[in-house]
Length: 430
Image (cartoon, rainbow, N blue to C red; front, side, top):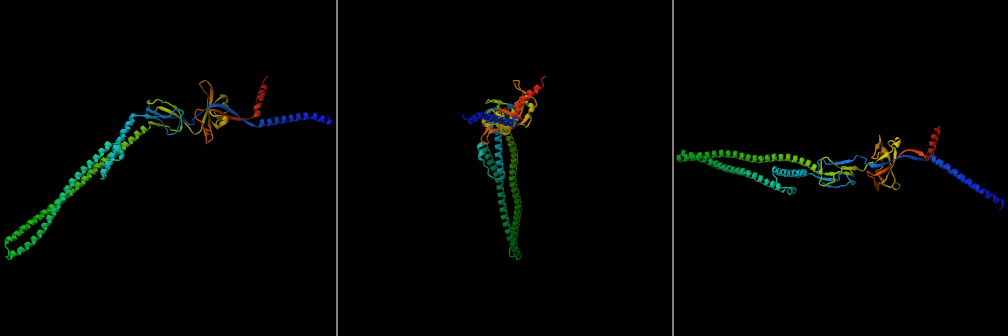
């Protein structure tokens, strides 16, 4: 080995060691810089449960009844207006049927009276004829009977009027004949009087003509008096005819007014009874999940206003109620950022929810085991995991891990914390 090769062999390990030391020193410096600058969150951890963001909705029946059908089960999601439970109230149902029949009968009577008042034909609507066939037949028969009765009364008066009119025509014809005869007799009397004065005719002939003239004048006067009497009788008969029509129409309008009043009252009563019957079909007041069902027996009796079901509303903000150790409560306040991990979903795969502290309990609460904790309510930014297109639903009752971010520290502060504590405690020793 030459001298130069020996020097190279001697110097190479030394340089390698220097490079290693330099690398370690550089790593330590970079690590200290990173540890001193990189912040990490200081969290207060608690276990919580998803609770409804609004109060539970209680489903009740105002009148009560007998359970006829239960259409949902506990834990089932329901929509607003969905029928949950059907009750049967025999009294209300029977009352509704009776009242409905009365309303239909009054409606049919209204139609019949309107037809009578307006002088039109009356026909029962097919729907009413199918629902109340007997009452329909009675109303049709009554319409025919009353129409016939009115027609008979009017026919009698019309016959009387026709008879009077015939007498008037006959009397007028007689008056016309008498008037014509009177003119002829008066002319004949003039001629006869001249002839008698000239001794061309006997006096008896003049007396005969005068007698006939007096008879015609008497007949004409009697005819005129009779005509005046007959015309007065005709006016009276026509008035009786009009009065008969008015009397019938007044009677019909009075009955119609009374029927209208009763019809409106019965309609209001039917609406009220119908509301009671409809309330026998209990519906969901909101979208949500059935949390509890109090009645589970078909045929069971339900008392008025008794709670039957409890619905936890869905949608809106998601609220989580967490249990936090009293040792951590001093660092908590409203609006602190929170991370919520729902235990039903793998946080590594589906992630967590961001939220904020909405309420910090004012005092401790104890559970059945005697554990003491503070309640902290957290509201999340979303009410589901996953995407908006494929959301993963979160329902009340699911468990969650709540991390409340109370502060930020560097890694170096965490690493030096035991040193600070030991140094601080060491200075207090005697």
